[in-house]
Length: 411
Image 1 (cartoon, rainbow, N blue to C red):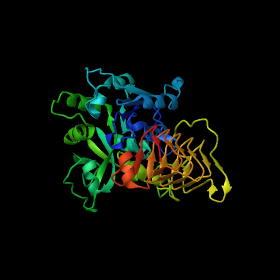
Image 2 (cartoon, rainbow, N blue to C red):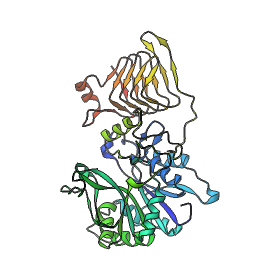
Image 3 (cartoon, rainbow, N blue to C red):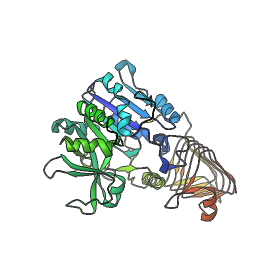
């Protein structure tokens, strides 16, 4: 797919309200994930690994850290005409922000006119998955579709959070597409499941230019790709379905083939981290044939110190990044991001600690997400007393405690 006919467009303007306080001062795609990465790295890695090397990332809300990450991390070779470029909202069509995902594309049609690709890949920026887009592009071209929508089977109760696809019985053509229906009907061979859109699309350029331009003048439209653009192309008979379950990624394990997670809620974000640390990972970060790329900090290796009774630095069933020092504390079933410090007698379990978190002597952290540079005082307790926690922190529906960036947690 390494040719001038393919252009990548990543939608990264999401506000991420359901991830608060993790999105209090950063865009959703900039939220750290898995220790070293940010959410946007997954979509970009899939595109770059597949040879799509001209990519723009459309940003909007609280985009500074996202813009900086893309600019410093995703520097491809300009000598070869390759780039990953953040593009903030520029108000090219008038003094207003993006009214929806389709409007974001419409306001940036100049990017497509400049590149003149034959096909445009449009990916979301905040999902955890591996995918080889080349296989989807090949099907798209062979079918003659105006748009191809990637999807997968999900439990029917998740239909209210997804675009639901009804496909023709004997082809890949989409017969109906409904955004977040409350009355979804299960599949004929699996009544408890539906086909859900992943928010990943391949458009023929001509079809994309036409449909977003038509949508832009429709005053009743919400200017959303799933809610408006795809149904328009379904009505035209030019929308087709790509089954993500058929996608084969080099180096994938049987256990993580077809893995896709929308981490739009705190519980989904937490659960996706727990998928990383199982003995046989549900999502395998160690696939070197299809790496999830990012720019690592120049940090020393992790260090575990002290081996004394009641004061042993150890981590079990956990991911531990560079620069971490476990100094006499104990870590279980957790993700420790770069430069985390765990002091003597501290206990951390079932938790996600982001960059620079410090856990003081004798402190306890259980079932928590702790954002960057939080200082947990010696003897402090998180996840021990639910009533006390509720007075201080955000707590998810499933009881995960979330501590915001730069906070100081006292006893």
